[in-house]
Amino acid sequence: MMFYSTAFCRCLAGLASAVLLAFAPAVADSAKPNIIVIMGDDHARWAVGAYGHSYMDTPNIDWMAKEGVRFTNAFTPAPVCSPSRASFHTGKMPSQHGVHDFLSEAPEYDANWLAAETLLSERLQGAGYRTGLFGKWHATTDSAVPQRGFDRWLSYDARKAGWQNQYQHRGTVHFSDDGQERAHTGVQARFLTESAIGFIDEPSEKPFFISLNFVEPHAPFEGLPERLVANYRGRAESIVRAGGASDLPDRGAGTRTPADHIEQLAQYLAAVSLIDEQVGRMIDALEGRGLLGNTLLVYTSDHGMLIGQYGLYGKTNATNPPNFYQETIRIPLVAYGPKALMRPRQDRGEFIDLIDLHATILDIAGGENPGTAYGPGTSLRPLLAGERSTGWRTTQFAERGNSRMATDGRWKLVRRYSPDAATAPADTWFDLAHPLGERHASLPPRPAAQEALIRKLEAFFETYETPAHSGRTIWAQPPANARMKRDLEQAGQ
Image (cartoon, rainbow, N blue to C red; front, side, top):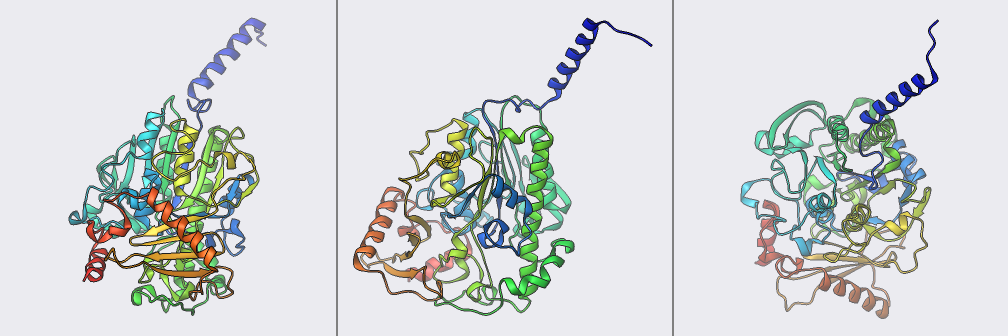
């Protein structure tokens, strides 16, 4: 048997420790936390188990909500994909940045969207972060072009196979990999997760910011893994049954509940479970690398979705005029993060939105003050820390084109402006306490309550709009897509 001196053993132990440290992720001990925002596409709050919906299989998002912070009154600032994503990345309302509807990827609708804005990614680079986007962008016209402020870019290439290709849940999807064409065949949600984990593993002394954006559960409601769809077919009918209507007219057959509603609903819910699996894979990847304790992980969505509610399929543009139904504007938002930032196992009922998330990320990254001067966002950091809030806002706002919404949780005001500035806006009121929900418009509240909510809505948008981009002048602005162009032309006649 061979014996070694104590000094020699200590030398070997020291060498082993040095080797382990050399191969450990450089960001593990960073003073700044890593930040990951995972965003679903059309994922409504009513399709998450953590919000009291036991029919959903979302154990990983539910775990985040249980062990972290669950925000129970999270909203989108604009219930359609491009405006909401542009608001998250700029920290501004659509009436400030100018994106009011989904952006066509056809060159004729490229209006240099967001060219004058500073993106969240740019601000984070300035704060010392390396940044990566994986999956859906859709806040400007062409996702194939890497956007400012991102060190890593993996989005979609509509030039190769058309814009519809990105929404294939499985099969061959064409990507833009740092501007280069790349095709991947398989389940694309898994590919995006693997690519984001690969970015984490790149050697760097900087903390990282990852924007991971799945196209699930966006249409088409087909092609999801059968093992997941089969779990929902038997229960889908008890979740959202066919039938129902509302005062708002639909936009045609494509926005009405289809004949195969049960199958399409099962596919939608299976897409949510597919996302949840990716959330679990990311949690495991962080934990396995010793990074979970120093990473702020957020799961959210760009806006909600109607899958049969009120007899409709779609979001705000399922109806004409656009709707601001609760199912459309309310989103899931849960956060899990370092103990130094968060008090675990919390529910927060304050009104919050994606613009607040923008401000929170900058606050935590050290790049901005808690309240951004350029937009309405307020950092959620005090809420994450468990502080008792007494001065938080009591009204939430959203917009889509020439329509604006304000709610205090009981009353909802939807105000629509006319192309003729001299014409008074049309107001519609909803009593959210009514047993029929928003199926029918309500009589307005007492005059004092009416005036208070109207005054808040007008004051908010007077502060957070610019003349060139205001929804009140939408008819003078470049259209985002062919349908918007047609609608604006008809409204202006």
